[in-house]
Image (cartoon, helix red, strand yellow):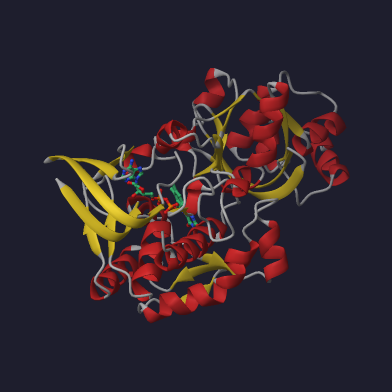
Length: 398
Ligand SMILES: Cc1cc2nc3c(=O)[nH]c(=O)nc-3n(C[C@H](O)[C@H](O)[C@H](O)COP(=O)(O)OP(=O)(O)OC[C@H]3O[C@@H](n4cnc5c(N)ncnc54)[C@H](O)[C@@H]3O)c2cc1C
């Protein structure tokens, strides 16, 4: 069965929906295709712990979050303020939370998504679900497998917004890498970003899986940062770990492992801590000394013990608490990561996000080769590139 769409958008995540809005606002007839039975599943999941849409920091600092990736023109064309105004237009006023993160007042993704889909419907955008993109046929038509069999789509231009490879059960599994390879397009390898790490824990530490740790100061991968993390059965993860995860991941790829140093009592100096630990113990057990004089919760005390017998010297014990070095042995699988590094390289797309070797094919969102920490930077880049790709696709003439 053959279908036509002036502009085909494949992927109904934030990048694809924004591309659809931009193209339809420019007057194009737009059809969105997605393999899942409902749209934007990862976006909805992102909203579960509070939808962090963007960040409030000034643009020069904001742009440094994307490293070398060439996202500046797209973010400049659709900056955080424009994103906030767009959300307000959909009835979702935003507020600036702790550390500059921007959230909709409802805190959730679902009201925003509902209003957005309504707006897209009013713009005439059609949504075809359970359509899995399979590549192109010999005539350049888009191939989809659907519950009713294969469907071919002729489109004047196409935007791919197929996401990364994290949380594959939500629809994005990175399978597009092979589809593009068949077309002679290579991508920077997909890697976990904002991810957890593996540590060869003892059975005792494994039993602390799920216990939060913090506030602590973490040093590793060339960065030092204060925040919170979580001990897991396999190792360690959580916000502060994600923030330094790119450097740790690259160090593991390079050296086969990486050191992570944790200051378990960042607010207390080594001298003060050593003095407290040197107080007469009376009949107290070491567990009580670590808890009362060291100020360590049980999970932190277990970490201190994980490195071997406790030093008898209070200064040495304080030194271990202030600089506990763990060996990270691996990176947790990409399926468990918050986001994906790697993807289609910027040098392979034009400044309108069109694939140089395939005129009429545009790319947006996490499929592109960039990464950023959590804090709203991920969604901001998806919205901004989606908007640019959709508008450019609507302008494209073969
Ligand atoms: C737990 C979690 C929390 C997060 N919280 C935040 C947050 O608070 N703030 C933030 O900025 N970012 C957050 N993120 C990251 C953010 O959700 C992603 O960066 C964003 O969703 C990526 O958008 P995208 O449109 O590029 O891809 P996706 O949202 O992954 O959408 C891609 C779409 O393409 C479809 N698709 C894939 N392959 C095919 C195919 N072959 N055929 C048809 N359809 C296909 C998928 O089904 C999917 O619907 C979070 C991520 C996770 C996992």
